[in-house]
Image (cartoon, rainbow, N blue to C red; front, side, top):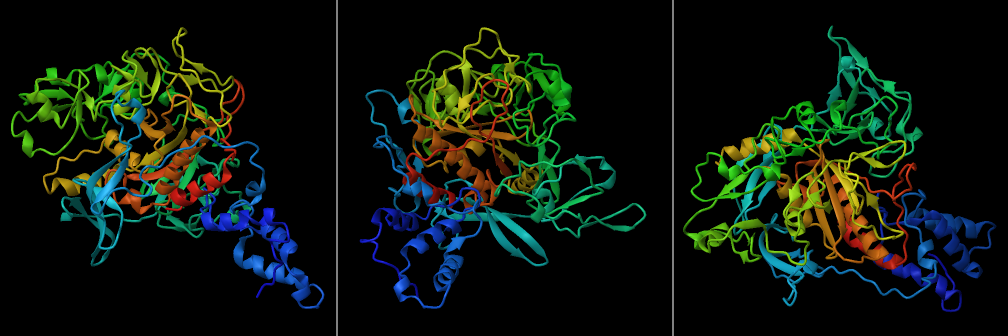
Length: 633
């Protein structure tokens, strides 16, 4: 029992934020802790405990404070929620806002709500509906979460003698057609003793089993237990530690399924016995604290002679394609007319896409069914005249040509633009429809390399004019790999599992499904988790063979709050992937994602090393509520 003073008579202004914070339950965005800090608890109880009703024993007040705070607060000052920002004066009235049109859910049962992130791109004079209710299927008997119609869903299945087995089902009127079966071995990953890899020792590298062993060629058994434990190392929440130590030649690392470490400057993750790493080119002086450093794979020369790989990925030159062991033809992928090549299609439309499986030859066109349009599902396309059609078949009936997939967008620049993926798009709307962030206006003329000494971008056209960045204190400016211009966006880099894609495709091939894993499908699935209407998701496959996702404001003049919220949306998405959220793993397209790392940085002057953006809290209560609703899911 705790006796406290009447707060109406004792500093009510100090205590009003407490029930607000407890009601909102804000959480630390890295650890998802929802408990207040121990120092706040001590301070509050020391001020409000009614000493007249406590025991007269010396030290009773201090003992009671320690007892109560041990139950309701966190001793870790870095992973708790501080009440201090709630006690700060706002200074001026807050007029800006963001909207979450799907919260509360406006759709009825058996339908899920999808946000229209491009209302500003709607045709002037037409009503812009901020949401769309689409049919879906609940995952499980009591689950409220729905997946879209026709989506494939991994459903856990009990198989005698095996663990982590799933059936691939499909959403029709309900979850059904669950014939395909696959199992994911949660095996340890090992790096052989003779691999010669120098690895910085990080907290994540040592979260594995310290008694792990390896077998030498002569059958001997050796322990790899390190004398340094994770308690000796600083950590950075759920994300890889930015602290590095002198590289240590380890005889072997045995990594648990789902664990990550840095191999020099590359992030690696163990998934199902497979080690997946980014493909950054590390020099001997680099460590994991140099996130901005970018060097071409295999020390290729910075020549701009673009090539298109058979997976649909545009690369700056053939040296990089050879380095990545990808077949290619000359030119940007968007320039290649796939329909002009021998094809079985009577009616053909260009459909450029990037496939994620390296062994796939990625089809770059789509055959259009010339009749029976009424039996085909809705799959909107926009024609070259700016009219939306229900599907390709309907567009063909109207004798039109496709500009891009999806509903028509408006209020875009009509001239060609260069995307951050190195492709030239016919218009800004064309790039947006492909989930590609625009780098600059005009056709692509080069690719950028950040000089690690000056911090400046080199390799781009000298007369290139970058879009202006708003001078916002909360602009999380980031220059995508190979791009020329910085963008204000939340940014995460994602590793995906080639082996997991191969498991899925093997299972799906047994049922005659032609499902292909593409970047666009992954981005379309991830977009459903961006619930703030003023933030839009963009993403592409980089030449370092990881996925870069940018989340930036769609407003012409975004405020600090909008920059903050979009950065938080990116961090939320990274946490969902990191923690294997059901929202991620129940969608086949996103269940291949095995690791995510936040990489947006504050814009620095040339020559300064970038640092992780620190988001100020001008509207602390709003941000706290946002963290509760989204990061804790």
